[in-house]
Length: 126
Image (tube, rainbow, N blue to C red; front, side, top):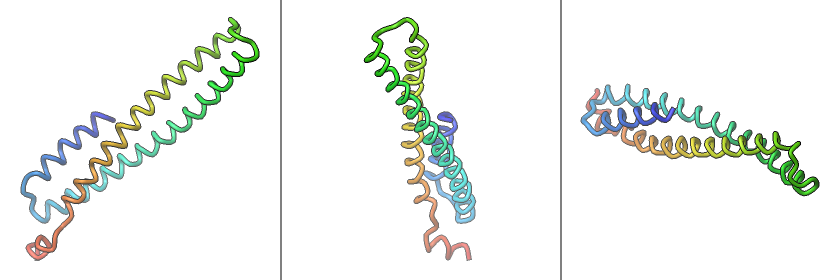
């Protein structure tokens, strides 16, 4: 997903830096709106997954804390320790990926402003 967003950012930056005719601008604006919508959907899904894994990791961290408090360090609880470590590391990478999505999608909004038709462009089209 990160490669797709970077490639799209490069594409839209090149297209908006040059001269765009009114008809091309309308088509590009529609395409841009569709792509941003797709990226926003991806961001929402990753937000939900990040919250879900954060909640599960929190439950396991709490269970780990109680197990240390009541039982100390026991060999029987090694699966709990391993699972908690895996969930914590996984949550870190989900947060990192979501951070990337959030920042880059916010960056795409500036191109929406560039693609809006001005009144001069509308009169040229008539």
